[in-house]
Image (cartoon, rainbow, N blue to C red; front, side):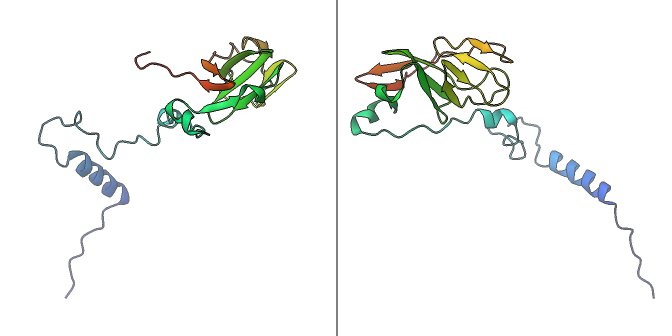
Length: 169
């Protein structure tokens, strides 16, 4: 006696049938996509999802600092004629002249690398050699196509903090 053996479906046929079942399962004709996204929706792999993750910020050094944004630095930590790059916050703070503090995005306008140093009156990007002026973020040497965007800071009682932006702006 021989048993009837059914042919085994190909891997491609199995994958296609599985896709049809997954996409066709559970649909009763109502649109629930507005209520909650499908678990099969690839959100983590999206490059824009990763770029929207906020960078961790510094922890406040004193209880008084906990009422507002954490301090980036003391004014005495920023050298006159130089500056400091804060990688976690993606900001660079400069002091072109005594008591004159400026802040710019630390993201190079060429290809998005983080600038890594402030030297000889410029903010320097290590990736392709772009340089920006510490006074206004303008391009000194390319290939950067535009200046570093200014960032808002508050300088109070010898402490520099990123300015809080009101919601809706």
